[in-house]
Amino acid sequence: MDKENLKKLKRKIFFSFLLAFIVLVAMFFIPAGSFDYWQAWVFCMVLLFLALFVVNYFFKRAPEFLERRMMYKEKETRQKMIIIIGDIVFFFGYLIPGLDHRFGWSHVPVWLVLISDAGVVFGYYIVFLAFKENTFAARTVEVFSGQKVIDTGPYAVVRHPMYTGVVIMFLFVPMALGSYWALITIIPIIAIIVLRALNEEEVLRRDLPGYAAYCNKVRYRLIPLVW
Image (cartoon, rainbow, N blue to C red; front, side, top):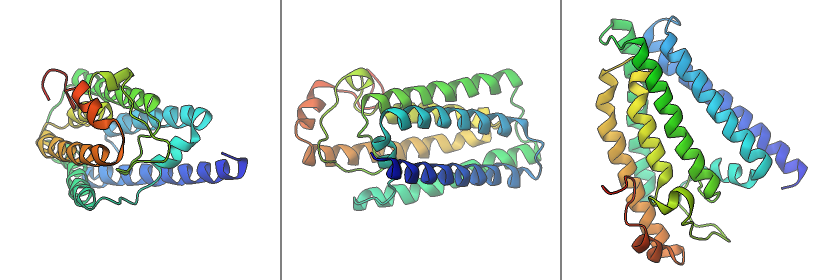
């Protein structure tokens, strides 16, 4: 990637980061009715640090990967519907912790909040390992020119290690934000991830040579020895 395109990518990433941070702050602190919500501040700082680390890593080593991750226009019709439903679930899911904090529905101990933050970091680490092994892991479901089947690293264990990491993250997010009530969003979130993974496999079986053989080789999609 030439210098001019790198500059454009850097600007795009910066504004995406800024927008994401503003949205997160709004979704946590407006429902909370106060900025006195230390669990949300810690969570935001953890996410910001992790995202900056990953972006810096790939900006130096594989900027094309970041460019693919910045693509949001989904081509697959079924994926579009899954994304719309997912966005609605995530939106309301992120409002619950702030409301919980405001009205005092949950009393999550500090030690559990911090352990949950560590769980979020662990889930993000698995996502990073998946990205590192497969730089064709775009945000949209499609096959790119030159893409090949990856069966090494975490892909030798499960077919969708990125989604495995995301599931782990979302299992810990509610308690990291000091909310037990937000745990009710976990089941629909996992269901959405499962639907996305199944449809993604259909596309990859259809368009990526060798993917069907890979599925026969690696039996489990998200959880080893389970599914």
